[in-house]
Length: 288
Image (cartoon, rainbow, N blue to C red; front, side, top):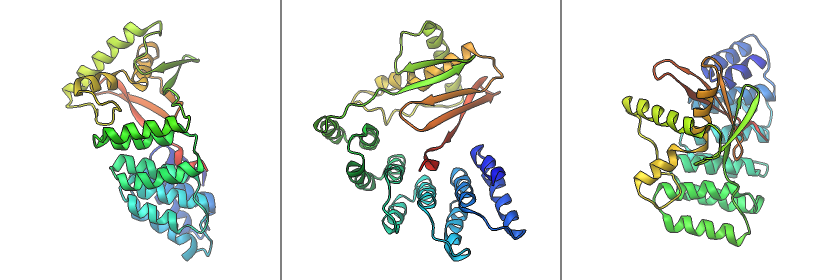
């Protein structure tokens, strides 16, 4: 189980699945945690059908009833692959009541894949379970903004105000030589901010050479594209990455922690561009 989990965490989903199948071939019976980590591995490399079969096998092959964690992995698996409506159906068919994490996973998938209807359903459930959590409102705002539905964005903000909810500003923490450095969007107070902005400009030029265009559609302001691109460029995660590139050893991994998401970002060297490109390991689906 530990080896399968290790493969899953570091993105080797196919190897995790191979090890799972080998374990079954040898007559070993998977436990609840093994099901979870193997489905997690399938989710992160797009092995949707394989992950669904593992979920079904819990009851059909081993006579067990799936637990809340198994349903969470299934919703994550379907949501990541764009099968958002199917994920909603699975949530409603659960024998136990879905918790806020499952509904938030569905809301996040709806945002990524542009399913407004499912996103609204998920937020309605979250308002009952977590009426004071600002992140739920932000996810729905992102979804509306991606379709230029600015009036709906304003309604979400008003709803937050009516509920007395204030959005905590997003920040990114990066560990450089044992010291933690925190950045906000558009940060200008860090002692190395001039060097950081120069590094961002350098990275932007390199990325453009390789055909990269920033995704500005979900910047939550009704402003023109140039202003959105500026807001995107100086996002807290980018500032943290740029600082780490300046201040750390080029061979050292970069670890970034977001305050508003249960997510860590591990970055490794990209020889082509000469900077550390992100491999994002999202632990949301394993926190129940």
